[in-house]
Each structure stands twice: as structure tokens, then as C-alpha cells.
Image (cartoon, rainbow, N blue to C red; front, side, top):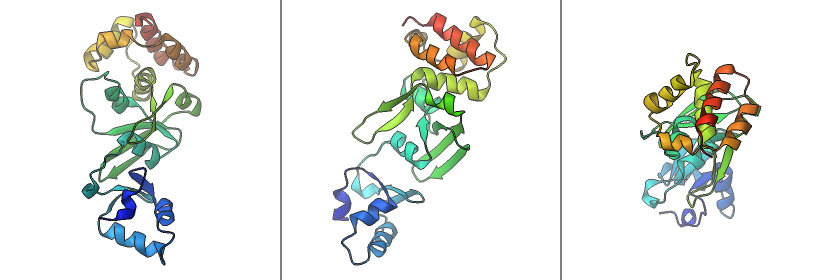
Length: 210
């Protein structure tokens, strides 16, 4: 086991971070090559690594998702599951960004990135702090509206249709919807122009008790 890696404060490290870690070695690049070859680190993508399984130190998939492709923030199904809104465990780590749509297959999971206009992307993002790593994630309200916007849920017109989709199709708990923050919903509404999204937001606002 490589002792220098045990000194890392984060379980996620970049290639430049590795070179800095071994800057006192005669040839830092050779040292990095050998620890990668020996499986001390797991390559996520170019220039991004996590500690290998033998170190038994966890890392935040959400924090890693922010680094795999950015600027980005966790949203959509993975965020809805994290917030406890949908009952299913989501294996695909879903994020939003304002660059091109991307998907990355890695040894630790599949990271998917959906593109939003910059003004829509920026509203409703929260900063989370965890021992395993900090990350940006959409609020519950934003994650749901991002899903509706990107999946283009246009064929539902009435409030009862909206609630049917939320409660029956997505299986979101009714009490969870009542806890949605009206102020956050109104902020999100300001940046949207699509009628089907605004109608959905209006339904959520009327249903919310906060």
C-alpha cells in the first residue's frame, strides 16, 4: 500500500495533484505511472482518479460527478432519489450542465449529463458538504422541474393530470410535494418560458404548503 496516498485529504485526486504529491521524487511521472499500473488508483477519466479498493476509503459519487464533467450539478432522477422523492434506487448518476450532452462509462458508475440553457441551469442549485466530498446538487424543486423540462412532458394540461403524473407515474409521495418551497418554485418559474413547464410549476405552487 502506497503510504503517500494515505496522506491525501480527499479520496479523489487529479493527475496534477499526483505530480505535486510526488514532486520530491527523482521522476514524479514514473512514480505516478507505477502506482496506476499497480492498481493503487482507479482511473475515472483522463486526469481524474479515486483511491483503489484496497484503501477502503469511500468517496462521494455526487462530488465525483461534479468533477467528471463540469461545470455541472447533480439533478434529475439521481437528485430526486437523493432527496427521497422517488422510491427507486437510481444507478445512473444524472447531472445537468450548460455545455454539450455527455455520458461517461467508468469503473465506478455511469455519469450522464443533460444540457440546460445557462439561466435555467443556474437557478435552484445548492451546495452540499459531506465528509466524503462536497458537491453541487439541484434542490428537490429544481430536480423535478429539470426532469419535466428535459423530458418535455407536454401532453398534460390540467392540475389533476399533473398530479397524476407526479403521484402515479413518478410515485412521488404527496406529503413530499406539499413540502416544496414556493419561493424556490417562483424563482425557477422566472427563468422558464415554456408553457408546459410553467403550468407544472403553477400546479406545484398551488399544492405546496410552504
